[in-house]
Image (cartoon, rainbow, N blue to C red; front, side):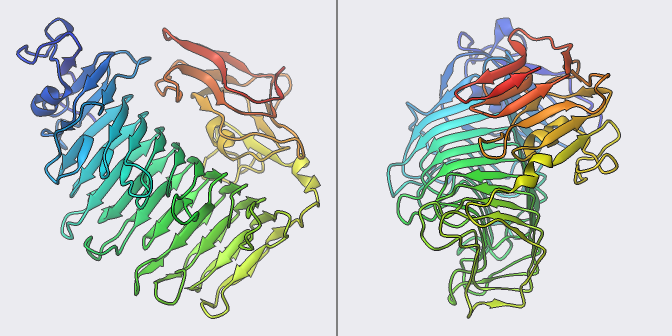
Length: 519
């Protein structure tokens, strides 16, 4: 869509003054709050480097004609910091938040860092009420803390009690959320009348309760719940509840028609759970597919209300997930748990249990007419040798909705392969130019072997070009291939070129790990 007012710019800098016009860097405003009170539809607010000690209430919004208002960094390589270290001004609902908005639409927040907020009920970003077209992209939110079991300190909170106007068109993409204390709440939560959302490509870790949650039917939030959305390509780890050791990395509680796909959840209390905590609530039409769920303390995949006093999960599909070495603490929950659930289909999942060899636990009193078919099971100690022969394909004419397992149903982007390839596999990339920046979200292991990314035609290197690159890596730099704390990966016969930025790399390898090779 072409917006009519996209050229207007405003500036906020540490050396600015709120008495200025704010229209150039030399007459910039001093506070983000000033911009959040004055910016016009279709404009961009450029925020200079430095730390801004303020809590921001968004009083403006864009519109469908002129376009959204964008709040972003002046320097694409340096995130400005909004710090709650001196926060005292509560939002209108009584909570304390670094960014707060109510009933707002057409807003974008890009490449910002939010941190150092401490209170028993607070959020990095809190979105309340109905509205449409809010985007949160490439944000770093961390150390939002409320203290131990009381918690309530969330990274991103989206609540809508309004039963007449939904919160729609929400996008949360490529954000990093870590070291918050939601405790009885969740790190990233969508609760109430929220629909048509996309939660994609995020990293969520080091939380003391649930990582990502979609809620419907909670008391006081109305009948309409989170629905008709997509949660995909997120990586969630080290999620551990401080009070019951049962926190899922990704959880749906009473939501409906949500697709949860191509996520990785590991080293948490539990992997992915679809439930309905409130009596009489139905979670339905869920699709949970192609997720990699591994090394969690308890269950890998669970669905159903957890006892007869709760709701049920019905008419949902659990397909082509890969579950490995869950129930790491030998609790007896195993890889898959089915409780109060009916008319669900469980197909084509690959399951490699931990030492107790428990694949499935089904509550005999709660599970009705659930169909299990065509799973692939590897008892503990049995190596899935065919993993080494697994191949994936990426071509210019492919589609990321394909399976990616043959040339005729190839994926379109290398990023798709970098999110889904399994240990021991080879990703064959067809000739042509791929305009993307790739973050490696997968890795091989010592048992199955490395993941190899290579050319489909050994005589023609596929080209990864940065000519159109805009999406920064999680550390704020711009890179054609980026990986952090990864092991057992090979990159063979590829061409990387045409990236221009003040801080960038063709390949950027961050953190610890072993067995990375480029040939």
